[in-house]
Image (cartoon, rainbow, N blue to C red; front, side, top):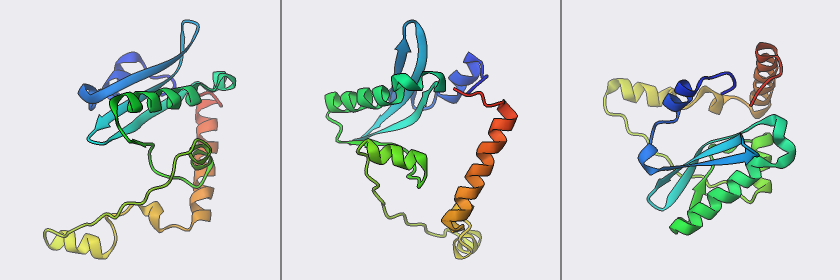
Length: 156
């Protein structure tokens, strides 16, 4: 969200606001990280968790996760969902913070001829689901390099 103005950020995060908690991590008067925690029946989800790289030494992401767990415990919510599992650094971060991968069965039903064709060709899945892990890793590294070039190594 680097470089976005307040109105853009507000628009980006307005969904599910009636059942959300926004938690901030502050250093002095500066907001150095935040999380949007969305609650549903029996589960809460971390929809956004963003911390400034410049304050990584203060571990704001750890503090935000700890507070999210505390909020869930106070509400009696047994599960905290933290995005799609990954094989790279974010997956390692989740493992080191006691998150566990939980695969749920997903079922798709074709409702018409177009749906039948889409399911048969497996076009209902993300293209990355069909790529070998090494290709995905290479593409992610390429994207990271592109972002560094585009944003000059700056970020949140």
